[in-house]
Every structure is written in structure tokens, then in C-alpha cells.
Image (cartoon, rainbow, N blue to C red; front, top):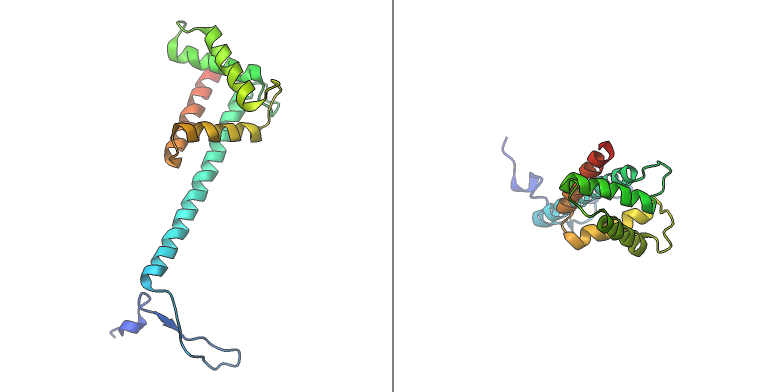
Length: 160
């Protein structure tokens, strides 16, 4: 038959607690429908945020691996420079200033990753990439698209 208003899942504003011996206690207020929906929505936002963070991590790892030309698990200054020279060539052809590209990425490596020019692990690279992405755009979806673009360009440069 027909549901009474208090039977619908959206209308349960009170709950009866069952005690250990089977008796019931007085009713206690539960969350309102609006509060329940807000909690569910918050949970979905957290899940989406965690999924996006996981994708960011995976893309940053792909980018690191593409830049780690010798595959030793560390990013060397010369690897960063070499790959970015190849990317500059893909963008501009032979009409780019190779010295300018070398200088720029040596400076980036020394200022942001390792002042002494020593190779860095993924963890250092990941922190640097997070800073770069936050500087360009704080929106996580935009950051994901940028990471995808960086990965695509590095992949093409590796094939060139």
C-alpha cells in the first residue's frame, strides 16, 4: 500500500535505538534530509578528489619516467636538458636557440631540484611539478590536462 510519510528513507528524522537486552530507548534526532545529502555529496567530492590526486600521481610518474632517459630511477640535469631540447625542436624546428634552452633548464634544475646538480628521485620531481602546476593554474582538472600534455610532448620527444 501507500507509505506513511515517516516510512520513506528521506523522512526518517528519528531513529529508535535498540538496547542490548532488546528493549528500545527513547528516540533521538537524526540528520535532516538536507544534512544527509550534504554528507553524501561531501563523500563523493572526497572520492573524486582522491581519484584525481591518484591520476596526478600517475601522470607525474609517467613524466618522470619519460625524462629519466637512462632509466636509473633518478632525473639527471643532462636528461632534463636533453628532453627539453627535443621538445623545443618539435615546437620550433631548427629555428630555436639551443643555448637558451640549455641555460633555462639547467637553471630550473639547479634552482628548483638540486643546487649542486646531482640527480634527484621522483619525490623531488613530484614536489617541483606540484609547484609548477599550482603556479600556472590551481584548478586540479586543468592541472591534470597540463600533465597529460607534458606527458604527450615528452613521449613524442623520446620518439624523435
